[in-house]
Structures are given as C-alpha cells and as structure tokens.
Length: 520
Image (cartoon, rainbow, N blue to C red):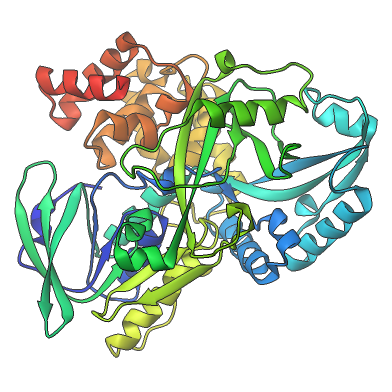
C-alpha cells in the first residue's frame, strides 16, 4: 500500500468516495470489484475517526431485541456469520458472559427467551456460538473477578471481535488491488458543478499542499459525523458520543455484557490485545468534531458502574488509556440516544450526491452494497454485489485453523512468543510471511516493543513501510494501538520514532514534531 496523490491528477472516475472509514472503505472496495473506476479520498488517516473508536465488536446487538429491532439484529447476525467464514483472521468468535443477580433488571427467564431468539435470528449457528446457562459456581469460575454476592448464575452466548482500524485498512488494500485510487490525508476543498449537478472535485494533498481536480460521474459522501456539520446533514443526523477505557487484564478469552445500575444501559468488559476494554457511554454530542475528548465525568460513570460487579474496585489510577468516538444515527427525537435505532440509511441530495447515514461496523458491507447498487443504476451498469461471501483480501485460501497453526509454529521457531505469533496471524493474514521475513534477516526484530503487549518490532517496521503511514500517531494508534493500550513515555516514543524515521522519511526536526504530537 503506497500513498500516491499524483495518481488523482487530471483523472476521470466513475465514482468518488469521500471518507475513509468503514462505509467508505466497503463502498470503494465493492465498486472497484464491480469494474468501476474509483477514487477514495480521506482528509485524515484511514479509520481515524469513529471507525477506530468502536467496541471492536462484530455482533448482532443483543440489546436491540429490547427495542424490537429484529430486522437490524437479523441482518447484523447474517453479516457476522459471513465475516467469520470469509475473514477468519480479521473476525474471530468470542463468547460473552451475562451474569444474573437477584436484583438484575432482566431476570433468568426473560434473558433465556432473548438469547433463544438471538440464536434463532442467527439461523441456529454452530453449538460453539449458541447460548448456554450456568449455575452460580460454574459461572463464577468463568469470571473469577466478578462479585458473587447475590449472584444467581448466568448465561454465555457467541458473538465476534475484530480490530476495527485494521478491518478498514484491509478493505482499503483490497480496493487498491482491484484498481481503486485511495489517498489518505487528501482533503476535498471544492466541487465542480454543471447545471446543479456535481461532476468533479478539487482536492488538496494535506501533506504537500499540492492540488488536483478530478472529474467524476457519481459521488458518495461517507464522511460520517462531518455530514452532520452541514445544514442538510443536521436534518438527517443525530450524534452520540461513546467512550472506552483501557483497563488492566482481568478476563480470560471471554467478555462480559453488564447492565448499568444507574440508567439500565448495557456496557461491556472485553479482552483486547491482552488488556481490557470498558465501554461504552451513549450521550448526545454537540461539541468540537476535531477534539473529541474523554471527560472525568464519563470516566467516573464507567468506573462506578463496573465497580458494582467487581470484587476489587478500579480507580482512575487504573486507567491505562482511553478513546472517544462519535456515532452518527438517523435523526430522531427520542430522549435517549440509546433508544435510537442503529439502522443505516441512504440519502441522495438534489445535486446528485449520495450520503451514508448511520449504521454499524457489522452491517456496513450491506449498506455499502446498496450505495454501489444505486451508483451502478445511475451509470446504467448492470453488475451485482460482489462482496457477500467473498474471502477477504488478506485471508488465507486454505483451511484457516491449519494455516494458523503452521504460521504460529514458524513464528515460534524464529523466536516470537506464542501470544504475539497468534496476534500476527490476525493482524496480517497472508501478509504475515512478509513480517517473518524481516526476522529472518534480523533476529532481534522478534522481540516485543513493550513487554506487556503482543506487538513485535518486525510488525512495527512492516506497518511503517507498507501501510501508508504518514504520522507517528497513524502508526501507534491505528496500525498498532500502543498509544491507547500502554503508557508510552517520551523515551519510548523517541526510540520508536528513531527506528521508523528512515522508512517514512522524517528528519530530526520532523521526528521531534511527531513525538510531540503523540505526547499531546
């Protein structure tokens, strides 16, 4: 993946996609596979806003059964099952525990009925994904960190997890392999219009200041929350802020779905790269789009609610990292953002631009396919959706368990620890061979960057050279999420920046600026 702004200059495209999050990435990938000439521009880094600030889940949304969003849940579960099959390196199964206490808002019988319905809507998945009931002692053995006073027992059920930023990155890579021109740090600054219809765009390279004008036949706006920053978008969108805290490891391989005692909201404890994600909140957002911060009040809310369930309480000092994102939902006047449906919608403006509104990471492929269908109909191109049941770009074509075991064995023989080796299979898929090749040339690259986290130096160098990294924050937040999973010191950042500077082209001054930006 190489960034090339000049490839946009003086070009004519069938489709311009604005926005390099999950919906923009799926749209560009689908359209390129159907044979359209596609340009995708993103004003920041890939997945740099909402699409890298999720709960890292591919799920149907068990809680949406309470609001009778059966269609939403059913469609998401179909997508979940497809992604588990087509992208086993990128989307992996994870079981979620749901404790039932004497004072739980939803009791055993009601929860049992909901989980049975969840399995039915998933088309009766394999036994490994179906719900199970546990009595108190058995459930507490699965989750020894949970408070057992008044615990009646609990359930577990199957869903799935991903690395959201790398999911987007892989789709961008697939789009480029299919012929799309994809450029990050490329801002659309003006439109070219003919008779009230947009037919082109003026873009600027944010890095160099270079300009280009491209002519296009169709435009998809998938810029997420930036759509809501327009007069038209305010009529379509409602924004909700969600935060996550990165906490010390207290879980095994299974996650927890819990209910906040103060307001009845659902939140999660999820194992991720050896740490624990705690989230999320759900509050209306009207603030600055460029600086979405985690507040003390939001932190205290999550800590207070989770401490109702833990044997040993967490404090602010236990918070290792945090991140915040803003979800876009269809405009709705319901009092609570949690009550607003996560359904996706397509709006087409009078100037011909198609807007992607709302939705979820899990079901983004389906929404993107609908947009490409619309684009093809406008272009009188007779093609069908090409992404359903299509193996992902970096997915191994052979039996995944066998391939994974073989790759992990090769990695261990090169000196990589088993946990880091397992994560390499998930992070890179078939490209893992290229990471291992670096270690064959330099054995020291098998070492971990940070002792407590499963990331090695060979992975760092590969991402820096091959994954369109522009800034150090791109590398350490979205390619390898060290900035949120650990407390990197000034010295740590300088050490990392010094290693990757020759690959990205930073001189000493640029390196200092990159480190300062990460510290801020």
